[in-house]
Image (cartoon, rainbow, N blue to C red; front, side, top):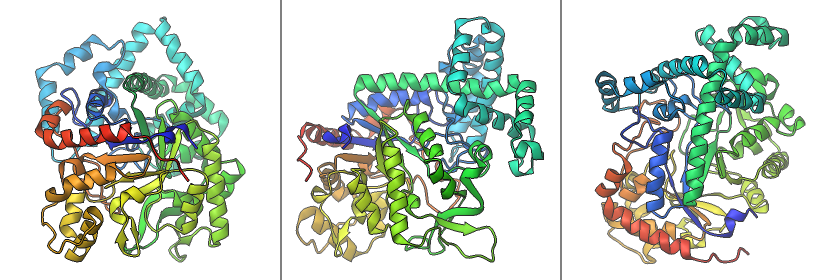
Length: 523
């Protein structure tokens, strides 16, 4: 069992795009996260859960269909904290006109990802030229060269791909010149030689982001807070990974989810299905490399769509063929998932958490238990014979929560469920039948949070929405609405804390009690 499971931990889901500070450009960044670490410490939390921070394609806001599994999204870089910053950039970001532009962005209903990236890339290009001109003979430039060398195993392909995407005006790589599409090594070497200055621009951005996240790690360590990251199941077809590792993917198949009670049509995710034959033969190399890349960023890692490693729902691009699971034999499904999980656990020092939500075959949780991997316990979905399970009876090696980024907050859920369901839920909360359930969620909010915080689960993650009884949703699965991935806290953490002081103080006291508890032995 992982050492982090020897005690109880309590955390909060803080999507990086959701947190605010005075200095951000309309989307949370590394400087904002540095500030919110103080909020997390103030609340007695010892985990921050982030959603994926990988670079997304232009005009895309879903972090689960990224441009790369390795590079971080430049939208999250703090311009003001770049080392050796061009004085002209400092002057610009302090100017009245620039601050008015940012003020207008912050007033928008949804995060304008494209607009923010345009501003940051313009400033980053200026900074890169300044750095190249003024520091080329410095120790700092040697540090940059060292970073490029140490990270060549992923950075080279990513940076070449990013430059080619710009050169081709973001056309699909499937439409590129044959030699480039098929990765002729002589051709790629020639491109790298001719375009080195532009290719290094993308490497420079990642270097600066790496340094900023190192500072975040230092502060987290000082505050004794762990970072729980999120690694998506797949990447966008238009990603550096699919282009550079074509044998690991099935471009004739799209991954998704089968029809269920929540989505009658099923889900098409617009991402290529894995080529499991190849990935198994190379011992899941792509996945091991992804894990390796983020070991310097995270302490814990949530692996999305765990059931997909056991069986993947694939939709053929040939419309004459039907969608189905890629493996139909349950014994083979179980074995593939077990092999994958064992490989990942043995390749990392991070604690692995499995997202095992939805329609999940029994063997998935059997394997998780066998390997001491924490699955999810979402309070509203944990039932036995139609009765809600008291969180104090959850299996200890698990992550308990009231909501996820894909669900409506508890307040919304309470409003839309019927009276019968409310009575069942209240019976679990109060251990008696309450015939007239309260209409307002605020009346039961405190006991709901008390119950989840006192669950048997070693890991508990709360959402801000459920702490304050808010109804802002992060994502509605199966849709591409602009409001998805756009929820923002509109103030810095100090003002936000004061606004909801009573709610936060109640949680803070309860967490302190939980953190002082000695967990029961796991049977």
